[in-house]
Image (tube, rainbow, N blue to C red; front, side, top):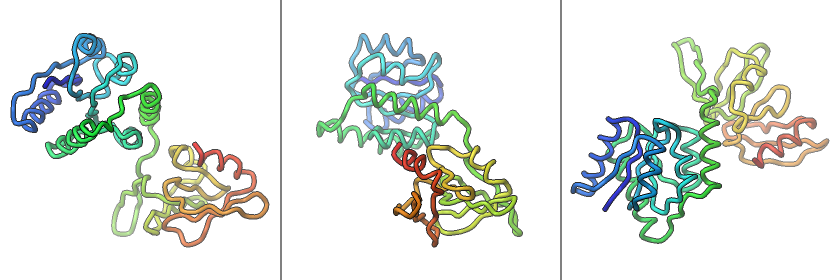
Amino acid sequence: MNILILEDEIPAYQKLITHVNDYFDEHIDHHWSRSVVEGKILLDKNTYDFILSDIQLLDGISFDLFDEVAVDCPIIFCSAHDEYLFQAFNTNGIAYILKPYSQSDFKKALEKYESLFKQGDYKALNHSTLHALKSALQEEQIQYKKRFVIKRSKGIQLLNVIDISVIEASGDFCVATDLNGKKHPILEKIGVLIALLNPKKFFKINRSQIVHIEYITTIENHFKNRLLIKMQGVDDKVMTSSSNTSDFRKWIEQ
């Protein structure tokens, strides 16, 4: 067996090769590259059973390398990037280990790829998939709000943005309802909040309400070109304004 490790950080490389040897219970032959340029040279000259790859290398991103050099063996990505990239990898059926990872995480990822490859279900990366991954990486690098600090009588609470179902304006502040139906005051106006949130996840359906696409359960037609939307954690349905309905329809189809 021969593998390729693409990792610019020396401690991370050392951890990966230790996990590999422990998993197979033997010393595994491998090549190691810290850059896109070196990785291309190795891929041009060698074939590998599988590749362990970070995303950010010394001179660029590994996505560019795989876009340039056709690779037909399994690739397991190991990186500290989360949320958007994690979702993009899962959507495309790609094994992804989020740093800092454990031997157990590594074992699950490798077992997944061994199973797919042996069954003939493994699909090599193509230009379309790599384009989607690059787009997710660019989106993640935009610093949208990830959590809000909620002040309560007993202290401070953190509200993760990914748990918010609906945000509703209430004077000079807003109330966020999470997926479990709990309400949280946010001391910002709705116009400020919508600018802080990822526009692929959140949409301002009318002058006073923002919805999270992950928690839309049903959508019904309503009069005057409006839509009634049932949201997880919220008892009453919310409604698009007639002027926002067309853009909302386009948004949910992205």
